[in-house]
Image 1: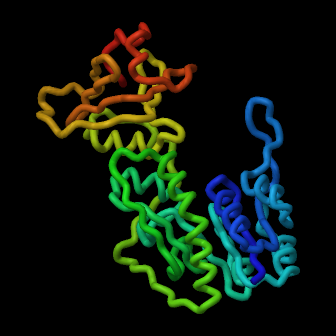
Image 2 (image 1 turned 120 degrees about the vertical axis):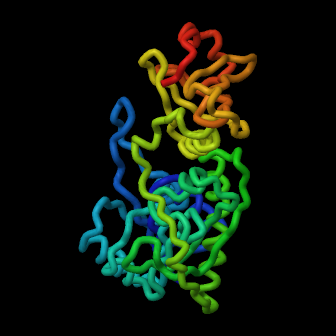
Image 3 (image 1 turned 90 degrees about the vertical axis):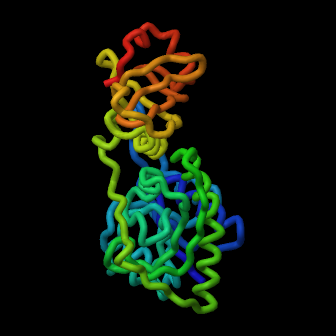
Length: 305
């Protein structure tokens, strides 16, 4: 079976690496061109390109879904396309392979359709995360389902941890999906009545509102811990990376944003309940234990904004 693989970030590169290490031949890898980033604006390769080079794959780099890409894919007469964390493909491209293209999505579809499924899994405090492989069609994340993999989670798991766990499960699920396609498989229609959406995370969603319940803020922080949900103190930004929350309490005694510094943590009052900060980052500083916050003069101001 001739396979074309599409992807860019580490989530995709982990899948590509697993597939090749487990005997799946990848005939063509499609990934973005190198781009300049960082302080030095140095050219950086996509994570998928790095793995493709490691395995000496045939690589085609492009930022466009143009006729050149169509011709490149058509030239190898592929049987299957595999998409992991890549842009949405138009029909003129996803219909080229004999068996079409499949996509690996980081949720249990039809839940969390869209660009940010892992974040919304945590924002919604889901008890089960997972992966879905499905056949690409002309509507984003709406295709018929081939395989799924469930992953029970608790309310402590952070985005970075869940990303890693799902990434580890992705390769085996793709192999299961490829084998199902080879043997003949039954597709499952997605239920439109239970569909939820996970659009791209906005800057506004990173800002903490202390009037919300502590559990809501805790879920917000763990969903955004790859970048840091934030508040302000003395006009300086402070980011939160790891927290826990208490049970709801009488909100009449609470002042949202007011905090106290204990031995190893910072306790923050919210609209309902207390939020316990464990890892924070002051503006211009490194991520550190909240226990170190008590040594900073800024902690004398006992309110986060």
